[in-house]
Every structure is written in C-alpha cells, then in structure tokens.
Length: 308
Image 1 (tube, rainbow, N blue to C red):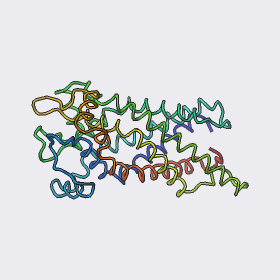
Image 2: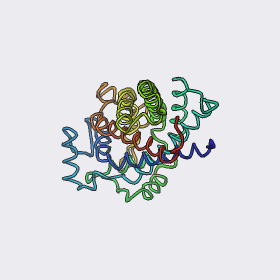
Image 3: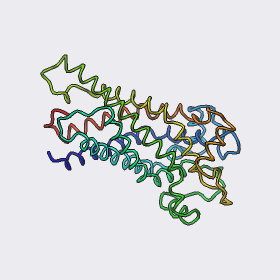
Image 4: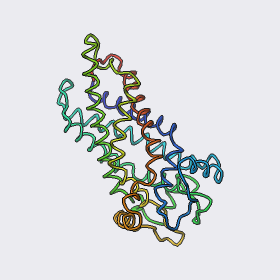
C-alpha cells in the first residue's frame, strides 16, 4: 500500500468520525458556548442555572432549532478539522517513523499531534468563528441576525474586515496544538499498553484484531478527559474573543489578552472553566464515538493490514 493511499484512508476515517461526533452531541455544544460567554455582567442571554435548565430554556424560547443553531458550520468545521487532523497526524507519524515497522516514541506522537493541530487551526479558524457567532444568536440579540453561513461571512467581511475571521486564533492555536497533542499522545500510549496486554493473552492474533469498539471507546474517552481539563481555558478565551460586536460596532473584548485580564479580574479562575460540565458531557462520549468510527472505518478501508 502506498503512503499516499494510506494518508487518504486516514483522512477519510477522520472525516467520517468527525461528522458522526457532531451529529450525535450538538445540543450540548450550544449550551457550552453560551455558558462560556456569560461573564456575569451585561449579557444577551437568560441566566442558565445548569445544563438541563439551559437546554429547557433554549427549547422554550427558541424552539428545537435553537439547539441546532450553527449546525451546518459545525458539521463542516468538524468534518474538515478531523479529516485534516488525521491526515496531517498520519503524515507526520509516517515521516517520523521512516518505515512502517518502526515504533514511534511518545515524543514523536506528541510532535505529530502538535504539528497537525497547528495546521488545522490555521485552516479552520474562520469556520469556528462563524459557528460561534451563529450559536450566540437568540431573540434578545440586538444586531441584525445572520441568516446563515454565507450571510455571516459576507456581513463579517463588510463590517469588520477579513482579519475578523481570525479572531481568537491565538488561544485557538494554543488549544488545538496542546489539546490534540495531549489527547493523541495519551491515546497512543494507552492503546499500546492495552494491545501489549492483550497480545500476551492472544499471541496468535495480529495487534489490529485485538481491540474492539468498547476498547476504542474507553481509550478515546480517557484521553479526552485529560486533554479537556488541561486546555479548557483556551477554549473559553477563544469563544469570548469571537463574539460579535454590538450594533454600534463596539467589541465586547478588544483581543484575547483583554479576555484573559477581564476574566481573571471579575471572575477568577472559575471564569476560565465556565461551561466545562456540558463540555465534558459532550466531548468525552463524542471522543469515544470518534475513535470507534475512526478505527472501524480504517479496518473497512484496509482489511488486509494486520498491524498498525
């Protein structure tokens, strides 16, 4: 099998996994985003007591469609992000391994994940900014609402310029690089430990046949928890920096550093973890779904390979 074919198989598996993840867990993403921007001062949103209350309130005031605001750019962004991430990650691992038989060290997995995260963040920041803007629209919003992705893009370019599409890039880049590096390094190391353990019991089977969907779910969820707890503040900073300016054109925060200073000043460390509960509820099982789909799609695309 050629290197190019293997890379595109990896990208396809990642893209399918990303779509499945978003479709299954999206309402919790809306709740997380709205919690993240609620700094306890002037806000366009009702006061949500908890995740369940937020879902109920959004449904009551905005209908079921309120729970799926920004769904299209979310699907697009997640599918493109995961596809590109696994593609860049797989290509980096191939480059570091020199050949298919050589095992990579933890440092190589870390470098591969960081490299992939940086490239994906640069490519997809405009998509995530539009998704965030659409998620934050509600009946109390005073500015003219975006009617969709194209209208949002056109309005942002007209009112704020193309540089606005890269608001939150700094924390987004730090989050993507560190989050992916932590998650994938943990996943690869836990996967290796699990394969080695099972291999001792089933020496006659190839390593790729030892793990099942439950194992992939456990590995994906465990690695995701570690990554979320460490990198979550970057996500809050990015979301707050990406908010739409007021109808007078005045941004709530001037830049990402302004977000950090204001959040620390008025809310303390807790402010950097606003919305972490729905985030965990969304992303831990979502990560499990992602890796189940990813690993099984790879098996379908290359059924004759026995070892990863």
